[in-house]
Length: 123
Image (cartoon, rainbow, N blue to C red; front, side, top):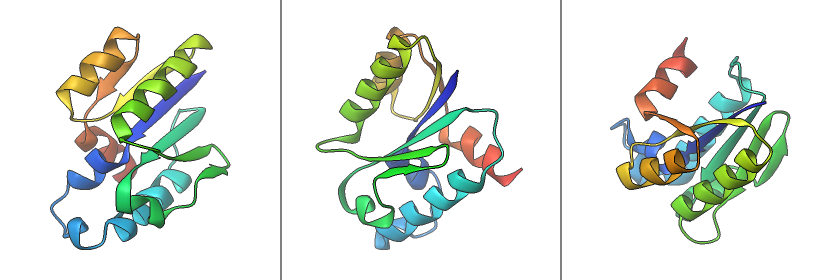
């Protein structure tokens, strides 16, 4: 099984398009793009935190799981990575946060940049 875990804040923040004025709207757009994306991943987990949580309801919609981080997004991403790796899933985490990259790579996940994901979603 291949799982993609998306650091919503990092991906939204990768494009200077005024997202900071409407964090919920930016999260809504990312959620929709992930929902309709044609990828090779069996499941996609979108992690939202703070005001962005208002942009997409938590829960599952097809292959897309939206998780509202109870505290910070990084802790939730690490927890989801642990859960997926415990099931022997191949995990790719999308983030530009170097500390988070180190944590999830230690758990056996691969990391890719937000720009990689945005290119994938534009294809």
